[in-house]
Amino acid sequence: LPEPPPSSASPREGTGQGLEDGASGADGTERRRRPAERNSPAMGRQVEGPRPPWGWLAATILSSCFLLTQTQAQEIILVRTEPSQPLKGGNITLTPEGKANFITCTWYRGEQAEANRIFIFISTPPEQQNGPKFSGRETAGPGCSLHIRNLTMNDSGNYTVGKIVSGGSEAGRIHIEVLEKVSNVIITSQPNKAIENQLVVLDCSSAGSSVSYFWSKGDQTLESGGRITLGYKNLTISPVTRYDKGNYTCLGRNSFSNFSAIYPLDVFYGPDEPVISPSMQDYVEGSPLTLFCHAESDPPAQYTWSSNKTENPETRPQLSISSLSFDHAGNYICNASNPETGVFNSTTLEIRVWEKLFPPRLWPEEFFVKEHMNITLNCTTSEHSSITVSWFKDGKTVPTKAIPSKLNRTLTIPDISKDDEGLYTCEARNPGNSAMSNAIKVAVDSASPPGTPVLSAGQIVGIVIGCLLGVALIVVVLYFALKSTGVGRMESHSSNGNIPSAPGRNQGVTDTKPSAGEEDIQYTTLAFNSNSPPQAGPGATSPLESGIIYSEIKKK
Image (cartoon, rainbow, N blue to C red; front, side, top):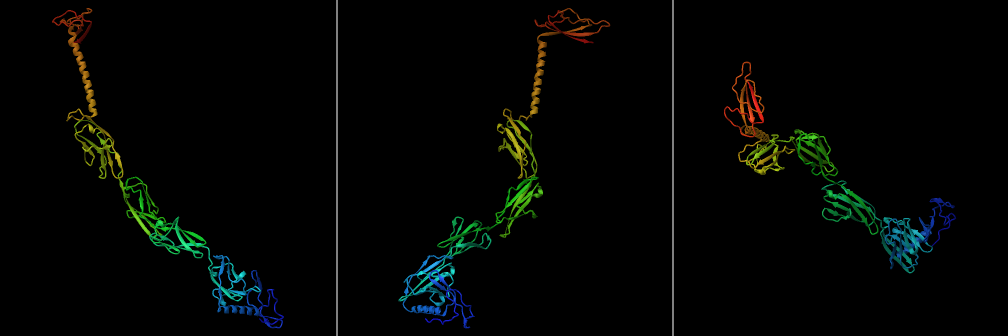
């Protein structure tokens, strides 16, 4: 090749310095700066930028010679890669096989064309001549290898190498794919808010190459079927329900890495039909009332109350009334709404207010009756038609033979027997409350003949006392009667006041009349002789053989 014309103003080689573009030399002619040269640690000097005329001519001729050989027979060679799976941000080395000695080799990004040339490498002296596709990261290595550092995804594609060797040329081609680890997995939802009975789509995206996606909910792997449809990157649930709420995992995976993300799916639903508790509807006047309303909903429902077509400003789920009156009776409505779902629901509970009952009075208080008689018991309580009366014997329902009447306020037991004995009570009840009466005892005398009048306890006591007094009177009368008829005699005397004083003897009756000034006294002497019966006879004057004398003296 011809040498360039000598010039005293040409820059020194190897200094990396030259004239600025447009600068003038010593002869006054304009010169261009010679590009800086640097040594390649692998293959020698690497030149960037425009070359001097002789170098440019040499590269052009060599390239032209290689291209001309393309029309001739070429030996196809293999190209090895290291590593076999290049990663983004990593390095790769492409090494062509074939003859170890070569004159030049050229690497292309794509097809063999000057516009695709990365560099031409000259073996002697070692020099790398960069081309249009040189990015600054490519370096020639031993055996005409191509080393690319800090790989990007754009480095994926076809690479071609051409070698001029002694006696011919060699060519090789290889396709590389720069792989990227899976990272930055993101799950999005359409719509942003999942609402029950509507469609929801979860979409998974990530950085990485050749990524496959897998879905799971909790520990359960999801597959297409029923309401679930799996696409390449998305999960569709149609329709979605409240039970689909939970954590969904998207796993992005390729042949050498994986990465996952979790999406908490919240499904808005409701409100369902509200439930009012307690469900009790019957209350006693004066008692307090507290109602609670609850409806299944997400987010929690908003509540309002109304009663008898009157709106209640209370917006809590609880409604309270301290003391019920009959005016509070009516329908109570709980309204529940969810602003997220736009659903409104309500329920109604009827509240009834009843009279407060007091213990009924059962009379008469007790019965002692003869068997086979009929008796009637009376239960006194409120006459309101809502009140029912029930009868009990010893805590159990009365026998079927008992006949109620007058709205069950009276109970008649016909032909009573010993089986009907016991404690009887009556109970007054309405739907709101109940009250039990006092208990009465019914006793039956099985010896009584039919038709015997019913006697009360007071009458029985009076009869007993009267009988005792009568017995006592009979005893006294008998006593005196026996005394007078069996063991003594009685004498009557009339005297003027002088009573014979013969000791131990009874004086008979005398006809002596009192003198003037003397009192007229009659007396009677009753003597008892325990040894002999009395000897009755007119005019008897013999003294009585007795130890006891009773006298009665009357003054005229």
